Image (tube, rainbow, N blue to C red; front, side, top):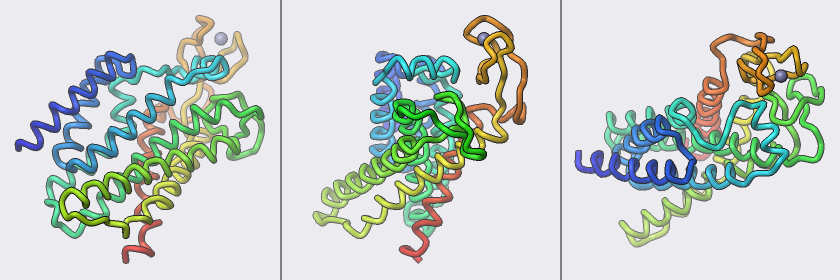
Amino acid sequence: MLQLLIGFLLAFFIAALAWRFNALSRSGVVAATLVGGLVFGLGGPTWGAVMVAFFVLSSLLSFWQSEKKRAAAREHAKHSRRDGIQVLANGGLAAGLALGVGLITHAGSLYPWLTLAYFGALSAAAADTWATEIGMMSSRPPRLITSGQPVARGQSGGISGLGLVASLAGGLMMGVSAFAFIQLASLLTNGTWFLQDWFLLPVCALAGLGGSVVDSLLGASLQHQYYCPQCQTVTERRIHTCGQTTQSWRGLPWMNNDVVNFLTTVAGAVVAVIAALPILV
Ligand SMILES: [Zn+2]
């Protein structure tokens, strides 16, 4: 109970700091406190530290702006200040997995798998951010993952070589963070390294790549997209930047960017668990 209370206080402190630096909106602070509190309070310090690493790295990347990125972000209906729904889309699965840990206790045989799924979910969320933020810097236009046809920068479903490398790197960074915090925790509690967790590096990189591929596949097929008749462009906005009301173009009405982001974290969790099977079983 005390750990949960400290978890919520710590999460609120970090979320308020993020709000101060314009990385979160007010509803984003509420959602981040809920997600962070459950992760710190039930998952434990290592889970919490990896989430902070995810949040700091993603926020730093989002602040690193260029004109190319700003133009694409306007079409994407996104900006660097995350709201509550966006936080839940990226962190909802992580919070659910932390609840799972709270229900089964740390000694349960499911614990390593829940932890792997958690690292995989964060890897996919990080990879999505890295692929978007760095992929937009690609000098070549992205191509639709399904047909290979060139699409506008930032349009859902588009991939580039640079974007795929960035998603591998985003996942790898989560693996490095997880491995580093596990070593720290082991040194502090047992006084020894815990190097057998090295496999988290390739597993998290794969989870990041897998999440990005699923994100792009959904973006190219089921994700809801609008079309602005005045600018003749595809967008995720109901009201376009030009002021024109857009028309529904394709996809399922409820499959918006947030649903796709949530499913991306599910894909990352599944890939991480499957990739670790040969090592852990
Ligand atoms: Zn328009």
